[in-house]
Length: 78
Image 1: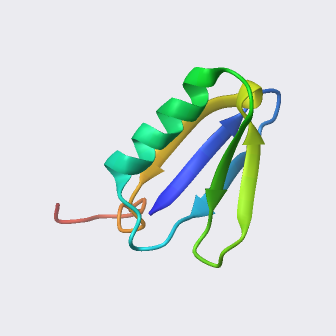
Image 2: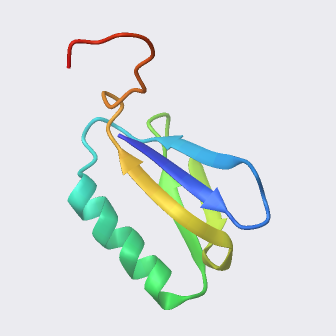
């Protein structure tokens, strides 16, 4: 599962690729809980075990998706 985090005052996004066992609904609930606090750090662990932390005050948005939801280029049948 892929998570993309937009950070305020930065044109770059933070992309974190989580393990295949990550559940989108559970992850969304955990992120909601951290962001609702208004301070602290949003921590995610990627599939290689590295931890990524983003200060909650700097989070502009969080996008949760599957690695199979790739952007398609060209002509497709569906």
